[in-house]
Image (cartoon, rainbow, N blue to C red):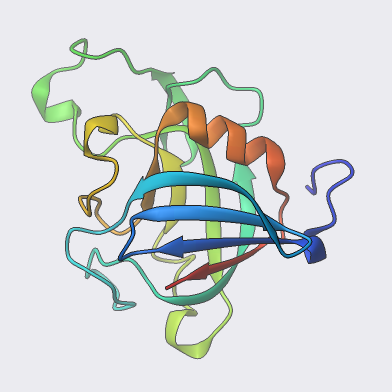
Length: 161
């Protein structure tokens, strides 16, 4: 489902692990920059490693359009709303919130990315944004995730460096 009026050939997302940021380019010009949190285990493409994969990807599937900010997604389906302190501590882990950009690896080294469920998504750990603390995904602040989701389309190129 491509966003109306978006030409994915003119868009590119670059996630920089060293800087812990995500930049959106349109027509070769940077049009947005957001702080992120990538894996606390560093980069890597190995199954079960909880590492953030490197290389070239596309946004394969976009999930959550129209959902309220802080919607909890379990197995990519909405499952309630996250409110700080309302869940039991054991349920407050690494929640996938707000929106999901599910990545597809387009290189041999990262071809397992979709099967690893590597996403760009909102988080219940916004206080950790800016430092590598995730379990492989690219976490964003929820308001930033809504903004990015509204700017991109399925098929958008993504590079993680």
